[in-house]
Amino acid sequence: MSASIELVISGRARDLGGFEVRRVLPAPKRRLVGPFIFFDQMGPAQFEPGTGIDVRPHPHIGLATVTYLFDGALRHRDTIGVDTVIRPGEVNWMTAGYGVAHSERTPSPEREDGHYMFGIQTWVALPEEHEEDAPLFEHAGADELPDFERGDGRFRLILGTAWGHTAPIRQYSPIFYLHGELPAGARLPLDIEHDERAVYLVQGAMTIDGVVLKPGDMAVIAPGSAPEMEASADSRIMICGGAPLGERHIFWNFVATRKDKIEAAKAAWQAAGEDGFPAGGRFLMPEGETEFIPLPAE
Image (cartoon, rainbow, N blue to C red; front, top):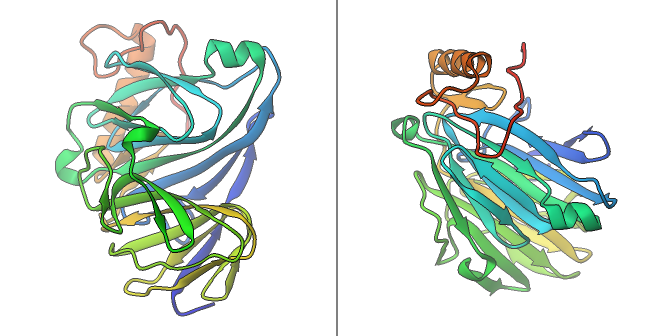
């Protein structure tokens, strides 16, 4: 292993009934990179006409969800009244704060026609002083995100600041999140200014200071180093990180600095489901939804 690489994490594949998810964070040896506490690759998957994704309403606290697609579309509905469809190159950012519920489903046109689905979903842990903020949703179109060349590569900045560019989505702590496309033979130093950084290889073949990555691998970069990325084939990468936030507790879709906040959220979701999601409760049902994911036992 190179001195510039702390760890290489190989994503763990899970089949969700014909739709594969590859989970990278949290990992046994690394729970967060900067504020990123969850990192999932969705697909790639081909859906036949009449089929699609149906993630029923479920709750979150203490984090922001980030959705970014390479292909396909997802309809997002939440309890603060947002109903929107995300498409490739755009970003959805949902601040859960003290509590929000949302669903994610394949939109009707794509479900009827059949479609190809491929993307990344992440969670960003909120600083302790923002864990109890009111829920918030932001969407940025592909034309609103900084798109630029760096060395031999082309990048889109999804969140935060990197290489002199700033993305429009508001942030609560130092962060960056990039989508990069590197042609075969491209070389580029990873000299981004943030404390913690990681490179995820989505597709292609590349090395970082001679360490070989295969698709589905995430290399966690040593602080203060500027290793060289080299693509030996046309490659798609995601680079993420920022300032460390400290330890977090995780249960299901809940993230918090204290266990009692997790327990309170568990009780609130359980009670909401039993009581039919009454108005004024901590968790509500997104408009138009009638089913939900129950609280898991563990």
